[in-house]
Length: 528
Ligand SMILES: Nc1ncnc2c1ncn2[C@@H]1O[C@H](COP(=O)(O)OP(=O)(O)O)[C@@H](O)[C@H]1O
Ligand SMILES: O=C(CO)[C@@H](O)[C@@H](O)COP(=O)(O)O
Image 1 (tube, rainbow, N blue to C red):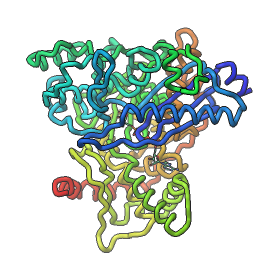
Image 2: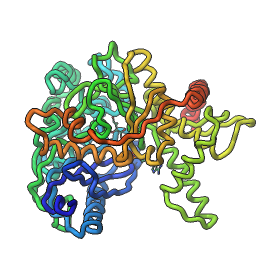
Image 3: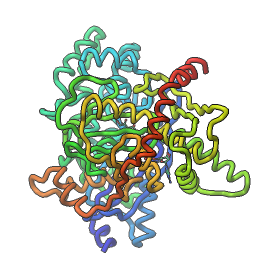
């Protein structure tokens, strides 16, 4: 009985801070969802940098937890006083720098910022390793290049998940997957790459700082490791009503890449998954290292420390959101009040009748810069020729194709240049909340079957709940891959869609138009 399981604390709670939604998922011993909560939030563009205030982090986490506790109360008639284990995950990378007293030195710089170009070029050359714009080390080195005064007093760097976990437990640790988005990992040793750490220290030696890089980075933990327990202070931070008790064990904090891999059972070689929300990114667990450095391919790890190639696009669903809001506004104006989910469902379903090649329409979903196509800033664009097919279905289909176009450009490097084999791509994220639409277009875009499970739209929060369950429920010696295969996914139901030949041909035609007109996007950045 679910109520006994909850009252007896045989549960695991996962909380993920995504870019637009903070999600909480409570699961039972069979990993099925018992209760959920969520909180909507938005990044701000302040002084030309994307940020969230730490105040909004805590308001959001508390509101999300309160929504989950209310769901437990309404569904099971219980107050949530404890959980069996807890895990925190979040958007990765970016820059959260603290002094020795734990004071934030500069506003949080999120993964979305592309102001780190000079640092990226210098570090990628020095390390002979691709350092993406959003990596924490790129942000740190950019601050060095810009001679930012706060670097005199920096004592600790972390990610958003690492920060929340630290406040809840007092532990400055990070899961290896999230750590791999701060600084490159030596996957054999399961530590930050020692040679690259030494290279970085040499690069900054003439600046006279009294820290070395290894002092600043969080300690790495692997999936299944204990990473502290919920303190009294932490319990109050999560639940100011003082109903939740301290003492709950926490798994290592992870990034949303790692939780996506867990949520889609894609932690073993030759498995891959796509996360599609504010950003869109594909990850494939590698059998062998890549043959060379590609700026389109980032290297991260699974939560167990295995090497993963990632194609990451900064721009996913944000522009679709903007259009969905506009259509909702129009609906309100004519007296037809509808919720956001109905707007998405209606538009996405309409797109199925649209021209598969976009009918001559073209869109760029670039709200922010996009390193894969070499754009430092973004200008969302919609362009059409006078004779194009301008109807609602084709318009929305064009925007969905645009959301997948940059991903396809990067996947071509992975599949055609690096010959990375992949049987099926698993997918999760809000874009798949309308069943069978974005999934179908993704299969066509990457010419690979795409599978989606029923926790697709809560994927990451469910993934970190599963990692928290792995902490307390794994059998001796049971690897994460075995735990997922044997305990979590053995009876899972997935919907798989094969690429449809007509969709595939249509997407290819759209992509040719998209690539040919990239100078239009570039000109928009230069002239507006
Ligand atoms: N019913 C729906 N159908 C399709 N897409 C949706 C639906 N509801 C929300 N979305 C899309 O999903 C996105 C949120 O996805 P999510 O994975 O939660 O993002 P993030 O982790 O970046 O906050 C929204 O921005 C929206 O574009
Ligand atoms: O950068 C990464 C992964 O490498 C993500 O954390 C970042 O794109 C944020 O993802 P969301 O769009 O919030 O799902």
